[in-house]
Image 1 (spheres, one colour):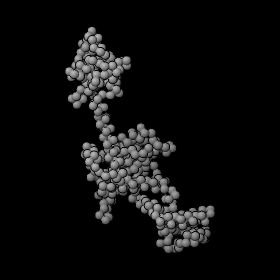
Image 2 (tube, one colour):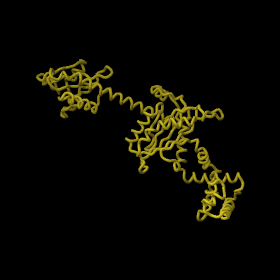
Image 3 (tube, rainbow, N blue to C red):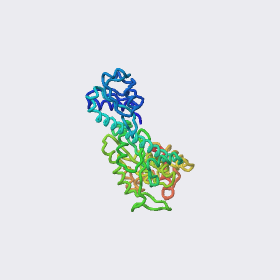
Image 4 (tube, one colour):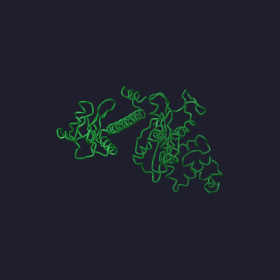
Length: 395
């Protein structure tokens, strides 16, 4: 590790508060990179070169200083990190007067260096974790570099996990959060979510890879595949997301992808969470947690919309809407299905007579060429209406 200028000046500022005299910090080449006297920055300090070569303290009396380039009287001491000398700190003054500060100044310098090294390691770990997360949700193939990274971070990727997509916006206007605030929230969520990988993926989105339990009362096995214990997971996520609940100015929505096993499982979980987030955007309330499995029908229909059958149903319904000049038939159809085909409740909801309702339903059946008394054809109509809503209002 080397001392940079920012770190050097931090050492100088802290040490000068302790000593009350000028302090210089030299790099591993003996160049002054931090000083209480800005005019001395970038000068070569020969006293520091002696420290670096002898690997020990060098005292220079003021009457000797003129013989050395860039040197004033004082005490010059090595700064060590992991046993290696990475720089020199110089305390200006007569050696016998300023030596009493020597140990304290060196300790201060080495503590700042150690703190910077720790911060750099934490930041490196964070970046590597984010890199692992992005590889997993993108579905990239594993290689030796990726495996080494996982091993160094001591990540257990054998744990069953699901993807949680977090949408975060400002409560006041739905705008993106400032990056520093987003990073602060990321730090708080990471601290509250042991074993969870978390990364910022867009200006308003974070992704979490969360360990999940596949046992419990709510977990079932279908076709040999275990499902997650949703009740337990919901309680755990409430604790993990608690830091967000303490920020009144932030609105968030969390959508949990489905659980999929195998190498591409997390990529599948991520895609299902994104799709579920899209179809529930208009319905979900702030601070909500939803599951992709709860939107399975909508996701099925959204996929079907791209196929021939889905496109046929949409064309037929759009032709019907062109003949519904004032929208009363569409309104009647939506109310009829919302009231579970109950004529009395539908009439009351629309404030129309039952005979008027029957007339409208007959007209709807005629225009769509469907028998609304047939369960199969009524189901087709329900699917078509839902498909139309999803296609025109996906979020």
